[in-house]
Image 1: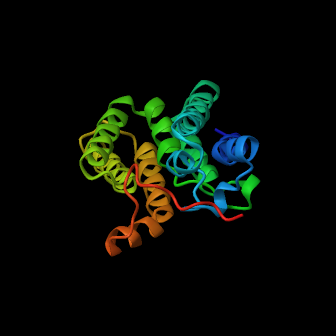
Image 2 (image 1 turned 120 degrees about the vertical axis):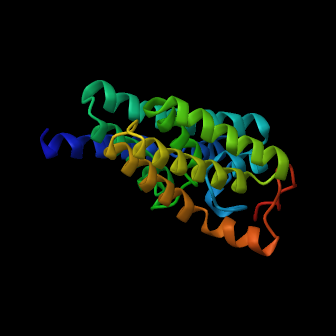
Length: 208
C-alpha cells in the first residue's frame, strides 16, 4: 500500500475528529466559548455542565460519531489493519487537538470509543462497561474515562499476545490510550488533589 494512501487516511480522519461539536453547539445556542469555561474541554461533560443535559447528549453522540465515521471510512476504502489504526488514532488526535480551535479540544475518550466500536466491538463493550461502572460508583467522569482507557489498553495487550489482534491495531490502541491519558493530565492532578468535580456537581458560572 502506498504511503500516500495512509497519509490521506490520516488527514481525512484528523479533519473529521477536529470537527468541534461541543464548541459549535455552545457558540450557536448560548454564545459560550466552551474552551474558556470549566475544564476548557469541548467534550460532553463540560458541555453538559454549561449547556444542559440535552445538549451534552448531542455532543456525546456527535463526538462518538466522529470516531465511528473515521474508522468506518478507512475500513471501507482501504481495509487494512494499518489504515484502521491510523484512522482511529488520527480522529482522536484531531478531537484533542482540533485545527479549528487552534490545537484545543476535548479529552478524546468518546471519539476513541467510537473508533474502537468499529475496529474491535468486543473490546469496545468491555472498555465502555468498565468506564460506565466506574462513573456510576465514583461519579467522576474523568476517572471512568481513565479506567475505560486502561481497560482497552490491557485488553489489547492480552488479545495481541494470544494471537487475536494484529500488531497494527495494538499500536493504535496503545498510542490512542497515551493521547487520552495525556489529555486528562489536568483531571488526574485534580483527582489527586481531591478538587475534581463529580458528575452532577454544579458548574462555575461562565465569565461575562
